[in-house]
Length: 318
Image (cartoon, rainbow, N blue to C red; front, side, top):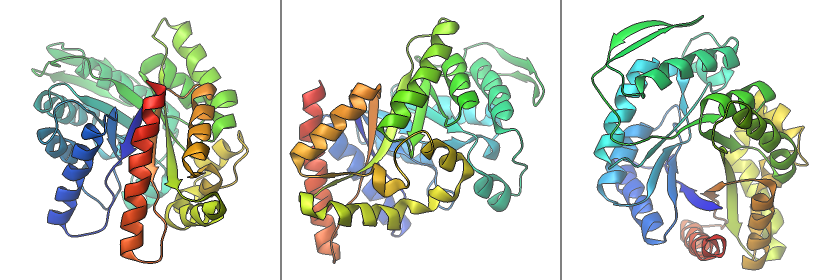
């Protein structure tokens, strides 16, 4: 199982944010992690721009988006930007995309949020053509009618990962993408719901076994402080639970909220929980460092302890 860290969506002015993103990527590479993942938060820094900056400060680590909302950008425009970033970072981009949620697409962007699985299917068809290296993208489907000259060719293969929660989206991820990026999926949801759907779909069309990237909050703490870590997770990460998409995913597992999914405890407890995700079929963990404490100094120290232990435990899976 590969290990990555989520970076971005941090408070602070723009200069501080950019420096922090680059420092996070440099730490992750030095710690021998596999990937640094940047979410596209609606009111925050552009994820692909962030990865370009991070790529300039690193040489090896994979750079992933987790994830870019499809409706916010035409697939041709996204392909052009992604291929540019891929070339600028020595072919290290992993492009995570998804149909997002109603509160982003409809409430924030004012765009229709209808039949997201069908939209994602049609979007991926255009994106795949644009990433294929052909001189022209010619796709006619229910959503897009594209006939666009395209001079950019990928410098190397670029994985495309689809955020997928329900059966239709997981099937689509297996058939048309290189894997899926998850949030709010516990061990049972991964083992009993996610992996069977996506693996069967990929096998049916002759694609390689898909990547399953599980985003999870992680906190190194004493085992007596596990309830504190879980409550902290619910405080800072719980807003996503209002989504019907996430609610349906939670029904496939044992968790009721993001706090239940939080991997917390001492190093031995973290390792045990990481192994459960690996046994469930997760190929990549995307760790969202979750510090606890009553002051900024305590939060910074907690984050450092957690990331140092995560990097050490990651070696157990190599």
